[in-house]
Image 1 (tube, rainbow, N blue to C red):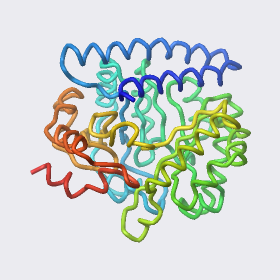
Image 2: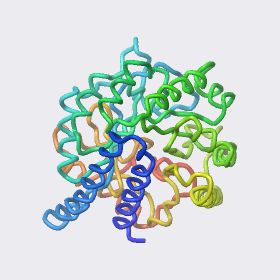
Image 3: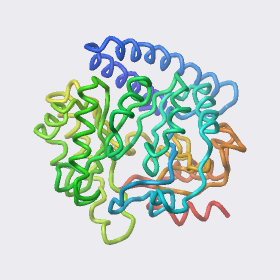
Length: 362
């Protein structure tokens, strides 16, 4: 299927299902209805920019807005790549709250309506979130460990419906605590209970591996999430940071099986939940979506990177804007190389070709 059409149809489907999920909440229903109209207009805006400027605009972004985190999760790519550090230790430079708002104002003007906020732990930067939330024509899923969600943040999410908390889990209590730390699962459940009682739309993010993906896609597990008020599930494929955990990364057969499981669940038990997989079956979309083809990553200092798992950059959005970043030599070379046959064979395509990507900078 042609990529732009596929992604546009996916966004429309997500918004339609979200609207059905919040009909019981008039305020959220009005918000989602408004965003449906904004998204429809943005499809035309992206097409207009492509025609007038010969520049393809991706439908979403990923931005690491925080350089600190209060947890030490095993295999954390953000710590491995130098993005995240402890709150009391020096960390990578980050943009100011106003600079982040300027970036997302430009994104909205270009017709980009989704930006996934990551870190570090994004909730450590309330000042950033307060400014970003003012960009009303965008939706910001916030990938958080959930341990900082209490009364103050619940009030923030009630006020800013475009900020959607997405709480990271690994499956059950044993799996989550094994990777994220003792007691983290229980604190995440407390956050989810608070969001449910506040009648807020929220999701969870689950890192899927060859060992856990069948369990976290079962009807029983999804029903448990649904009972806790969860309406959105991101399944993120594990990217190995060293050879010792390479066996946990998906191969083609796991990608195909995962897609079939999700298709079955969407048609049965999870009909009123939104189930998304990333990167998913890239072969069906003509290969890797990074480097601006479907999205790109903005580092905490504004560096335009192909994706979070490929932290290479030859441009900074503060100097180039989003338009300039999309036309950077590195992004163009990656898109050309991907077109020549790079395929998704497990984990992240660019991570598998990291030496080739690094060589493109010279």
